[in-house]
Amino acid sequence: MTTHVGIEPGDGLIGRFGDTVILIRHDAALASGADEVARELLDLAAEVAADPERPANMIAARLATWVIGRMADDVTAFGIVTPVPDGVVMFLRGAVWCEVTQDGSARQMSGAQALSWVDQIVPAPFERLAIGSAPGRRPVQAYPRSDLRAGVVPGQGFVLTLQELAPSPEEPEPSPAEPVSGRQATAASRQATAASSGPAERSTMDRSERAGQPQPTVIARPKPSGQGAAAPLGTLASESGPAIPLDRDYVLGRDPHHDPLVQSGAAAAVAIPDHEQMISRVHLYLSVENGTVVVRDASSAHGTYVRSPESSEWTRLGTEPSALLPGWSLRMGLKVFVFEIT
Image (tube, rainbow, N blue to C red):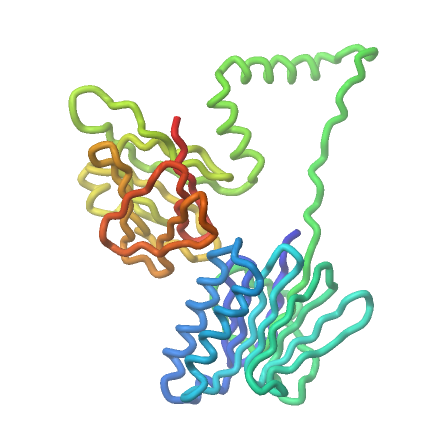
């Protein structure tokens, strides 16, 4: 499934981070300290989007905690939706409303009519989910050609629809009784050649092709210092890209090749594609020190997180070096790596 987000023009703010979408009502722009509040809300939406495994009740609790902390001095109205396995979590606070069209019928929920907030799970599938802030709770009228894929834009409402991905065509395999054509024989020959190149190389290629997304790119790869290259401690593996061998220092980010460590040749640069704009140009530093993998955040906007195999909670790292242990996960933006022993 993919998510399409249409925008109704207006004076508020609408932000999209992955498939998490937030509307901040225009009234906030007139209040004292509105810029700071809007920035906090956008950061909150990015934080929610960055942890796709967080349970629905924990998402609602995190949003409610922010509202409770602001109740005494702020009345900023906002609405947010974020995906969970069963559908989406919808959260409304203040003079915003949500209309869900499902099975041919529509229902509305209003944050203005709640004493504190409204939070619900909207089960999938649904035809249309709209959050608006226009007076009179009139239907959201998204601009026909609008399609917010990432970032923050002006607007007073949005319409979210789910779209099926077109299935990729598959060639039927010949039955044992049918003669194999020259074209099929050539394809079989290519597959046999790929198989002979070794299981590790084939595994990396298959994982990248299945994802169908831009992959991390090593822009520079200096050799490890010292006499003779030491064997890697392991790799950083991900679902949608080639593994990164842990045998040297790296700088990871959206555009890390201008970092002084890369420019001097002391570290390799790994560029991470980031359509959601949640990865900083220079996001984190990774090094191998005395047989230990060490990670430190590069003062990134949305943070660097680690998680042990036994835990469901992510821990945010600071700029001080922190050890990354085998089996642990490392997250930047929506990109998750796992330290695997080879």
